[in-house]
Length: 352
Image (cartoon, rainbow, N blue to C red; front, side, top):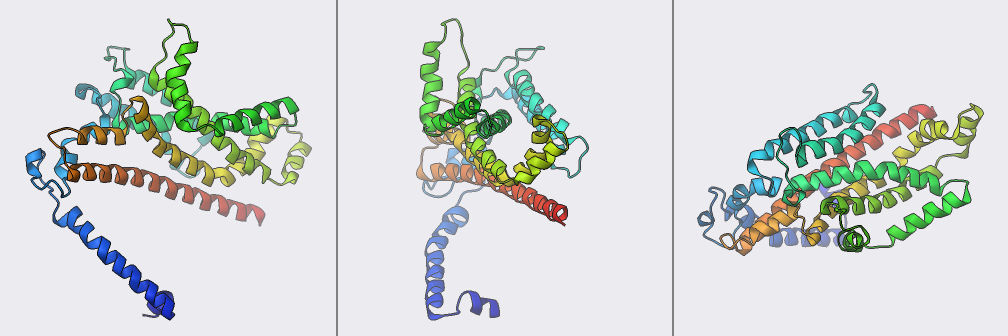
């Protein structure tokens, strides 16, 4: 009662605002609960199991769940997707274990292994595996592949761009700054259209580059420029005494950068890097514009099926996609917050 009085009813104005919020919650929440739970259809997997076309239709999600996860990837070959993503998760597990020995080497090996896993298992065409073109990739599988590939390739490039922009060599500093500002000023859709439509016009006719690979390259360029600015800001927050102390120890430029400066800069840049990665994970929906169907694209495609076509089915599909994206992004933000707390504890002990 004391908490309610202090936080919700401490003054006449707060009391009015609290009651207004309660009214809004009741007005909006009761119909939502009715649509989402009470009037919703839960069992079955056919359009006939949702006779009311306005209520939530969870049989639609059940019937098209595999399509939402794998896209048009051949059903008999989906074990390759499960195996590949499982290997990626296993290779990334040491990164989540505190004080895991040789974690830096694990990071390097994981970044090298992820593209190889994708090329060998997901694409196939080697060792008796059937070749599956990237046009058949889709759903949550395509979203994860895009996000992991772009993150693992853009982060090293971002570090080099940030170091180049902070360089004492004028030519290097101007080139890196021009490159970053150029791509940061261009909308993502324009970059994708350039990569998909215009880029092949400047290449020899016999040279064919996969559409997905071109899209990944475009997103890598954009994301590396965004993260470079976050890392540059973190580098500028490092006290000058750290640079001088590293020089006094006789460390060369690369040694003091990777052993002294970057380990202190990354915890500072971590919130912005996480924010950029979450934005990238949601940005994968723009692949729909160039004919690649991620999770949202597959939901739209499935909801346009004449057998399922109804407002309730479309709304249920979009809600499922929203919950899926929210769950992943919220989990990533919580992990980032945990890393920030660990870094703050380290700074406290180091400062004492």
